Length: 107
Image 1 (cartoon, rainbow, N blue to C red):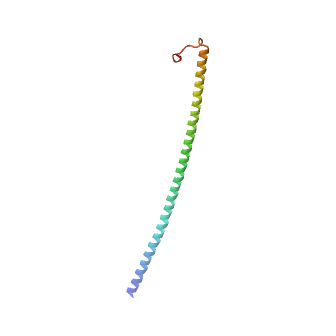
Image 2: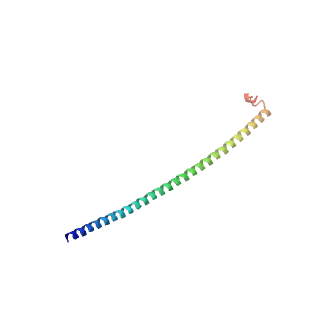
Image 3: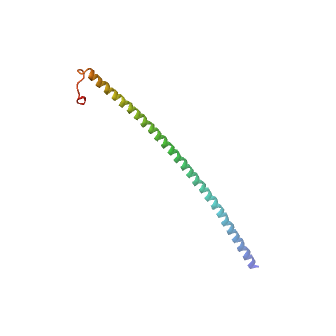
């Protein structure tokens, strides 16, 4: 009977160890899933913030391109006005030669 009691006690101890290990494995699995969830959320937040940065950068680029285009248009208008003014001055010099001094570039 002593052997039987020992065997039953050892079996109960083994069962308890097995149950404890199974509980540990279950808890560990839950914890791993929890951390995986957190990592996915972090990655998702990173993706969202990166997309927002890209959109902001694209918007800035578009704004910069619009500004450059406006400057080019204004520069073109100024160049046109300058050419027009030069032609008017040349015409006035021809019309009133004594009122305008001759410049080296006119010769």
